Image (cartoon, rainbow, N blue to C red; front, side, top):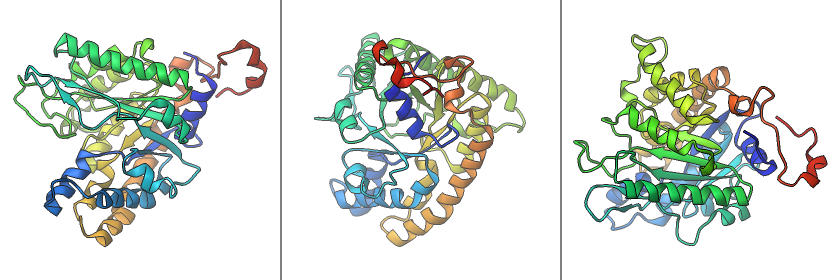
Length: 351
């Protein structure tokens, strides 16, 4: 694999100076809006409450982050002036309101936020575009094709505007599954084969994925952590996940608890992951104090920051720098200009 100058720069901006990702997700919408709505007893979560919580996340957690993932509805307008300019800025493209298939199967369609695009993310200063695609390889073939087309269309736009494509995959329940939820949480009953098949599909170069944001192939509560009894069997699934990705990848937390997510990272880093892009594992405990803003800020500044410091120490010691991934070859990531006539501009700009 080669990498263009714009994508190289975006990847570098998201990572720390050693090439490892310590990214905090502040783009969640239903996982933040729904609890606020319930606490307030309102039909919709007040904008000021949602945006206010995201402002606290940016203020308290950015010092431990290499990049932050913001959404255009709440986090960006409220927090862009607060964001440390040294951090990478990842911006969400997909709408949180997915469409379900009309046949009642539970299949889901992803879509962009209305009046939002890769071009606009580039124009507002984004260093990368993040997209979540819901995918069940055992679902309706027509839905799978539609999700593939959606993903490829975004990849082509990221290639056009020379910006990294951070691609997230989540397994979700179909009607035939015993476990039913529409929340943004991992399926406890998910099959690791479905996770691996999904990643294998979208690792095809035609989709243009630069960085995978992946869920654990095993339910987080069932992951022992490297060194614990039975860890070798779990490690085989993570190793397979890394091979399927075939490029830099990070772990998402999907609502896992703090200790659960740390155990997941020990396996992921052993399998070659380059860091994390996580939200609720970091800040959910503090969020449970809502609407006590002082208590939220106190827990973020203490427990959440301490947790991030621990994750970052683990990341520093065990994660693989993104530019050293095998996909770039023995020399690491090197910039390849799209136009050979400008090749002299990029001489010596490699990883």
